[in-house]
Each structure stands twice: as C-alpha cells, then as structure tokens.
Image 1 (cartoon, rainbow, N blue to C red):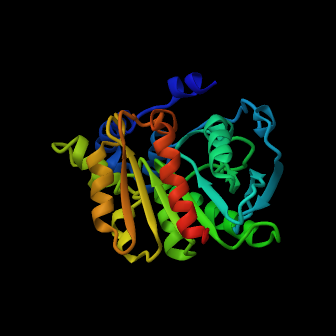
Image 2 (image 1 turned 90 degrees about the vertical axis):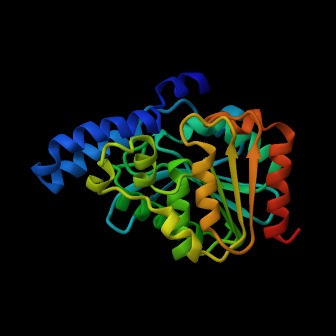
Length: 284
C-alpha cells in the first residue's frame, strides 16, 4: 500500500517545474485561471481509500464535520491512553488512508489520541483544495476537537510536508501545547527560487504557504524533524525555516531518511525523540 502511494506521489521539483512553465505562459491571462492552474500542480488528492485504522487493529471513530464556508470534511478520531491529542495535518498527495502505517506506529509508540482528517477534495471530504481552503479546513478541525469532551485541550499540531505550513498557520491563530513540523519548507516562493533561480516563477505565484514569515511570531515549544536525504524538500530548506523560529525549539536530523520514509528510516531514535517532546509538552 505504502509503495503504491509513493509511486503516485509527485515531488516539489516536478511541481515547481510545471508551475514555472505554465505561469510564464499564462501570466497575462488572469488571476482566476492562474489559481486554477496552480491548484492542479500543488494538490494531488486521491478519493479512493486504501483502508481504515481497523486494518491495523486500532479503535477509531469516523468523523464528519463542517467548515465555516459549508464544506463537509471527513476524519478519524483514534483514542489513546495519554491525556494529549495529536492533530495531524498531512501532505499534498493521497488521503488519510495513505498514512495508516505511519499512524499505527505512532499510536503504538506514543499512546496519545490522534485526530487526522482530509482537506477538502481529498478522500471523503467534499470540495476542491486551495490555500485558503486548507486553512478553513484546519480551523474546522480545531473547532471540532473543541466540541469533544474526550479531546483534551493539551494538543500537539503535527504538520508534515505541505501540512507543515497549515500547522504553522494554525499555531499562529490557535496556539497548541506543542508544534511538530516534519519535512517542512519555508514557503512555496522560497522553493521556486531555490530550484529555478533563473526563472522568476515566484513573482507569479498566488499560493504562498509562507511559513517563514509567520514562524517567528509563534511562542510554543517547537520540534522540527527532517531527513538528511530528503529528495523533495532539502534539509537546508527545513533549517532555514528553523532559523526563523524563536523560543523553545529543537531541530532533529533523521539520518538516512528521505522525504517519505522518515518514520521507517528513523528507527527507535525517531520515536524516542517524539516521545521526549510529548512528555515535555504533555506534563508527564
């Protein structure tokens, strides 16, 4: 299942190359058309599910909730033993079913409660993705957790890849107990400038996900994790974002890990690092 998903997963390099070519061609054709074309090169949702937490022996609840602009979203609530809730913001491809192996291992190793959901246009969630839409989706997920008596107010936001930018935005608006960013990037324009310095594609981009301008305003414990073999978002991109952060922060390099195998390549040391952070912010 995991390998099939990764074969479908497209890289930021391919994404930005397509954007560079397209946006230079269509720059004069209007903002609406530009935004539609950007969306096709940034988001790679898959509707079909490849299972649910029961396939890994996890108790869970199917959850449906509404966003502020009337979009119905789908997620899974997986109870844990510890008095802490982990809100998961996933990357730009697939859907929550493609995170099941990762989810099961994290649940086993950490024992916290998990809430993972699909952005609009992904899996069973309605709508079409956009930067503004993903922020509305994330806000709705937080509101949903606030409505549950069994979702503790002590929370960790976990953002992976594209989800790191959404987690940063939410941490700025609705501060959590702790923030974990894995395989994070400073912004879409930053990646465009780095990968294609001779093409001024960033000047045409409407989608920003500008974490580097926001993270310095966040005052919550931060753990950043990044593979030193990441072929999609290079280590130095994550380090640049980390340098812009302030306060209680730690950067953990996952030796030998690429973009999609952090939780496997990292081994026990990876989970120990997460457990240490959980204990710190959870009060254990």
